[in-house]
Length: 130
Image 1 (spheres, rainbow, N blue to C red):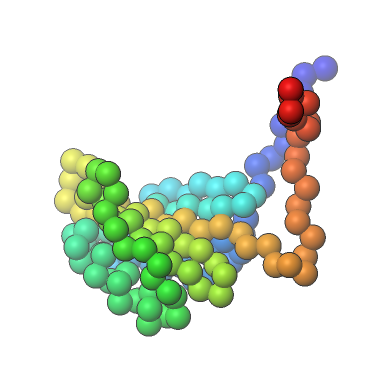
Image 2 (cartoon, rainbow, N blue to C red):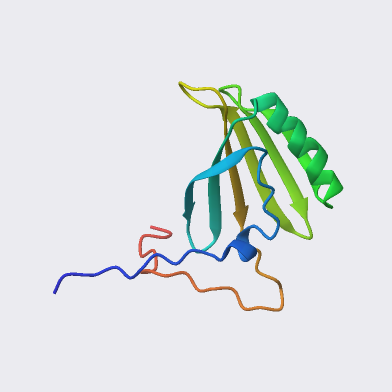
């Protein structure tokens, strides 16, 4: 019998991104996720510099600790912030071929110590140690 995969389970927005700072003048382009993480991509009419300045102000004002504020290998702004143990990554880049900015906001589900961790799904690695 053929193996049929079950539906992809995506975390709820509140679990992966308890605070979703939507960039100014933005629309949602896509949403992708796994059981552990979620990424929402926006297109903003604002410039990359305006969007970057927005996040540099709103994150600390909303209780987030801006842990990293850097530029990646292709010149996009890459922010990493933490709040109450919740991580958030924000990547800000020029929209290709048109005015505006692409903003990727990613978050991960944080499992508290009081809740049991989810068991991995799939066969155990039988090649380990050989």
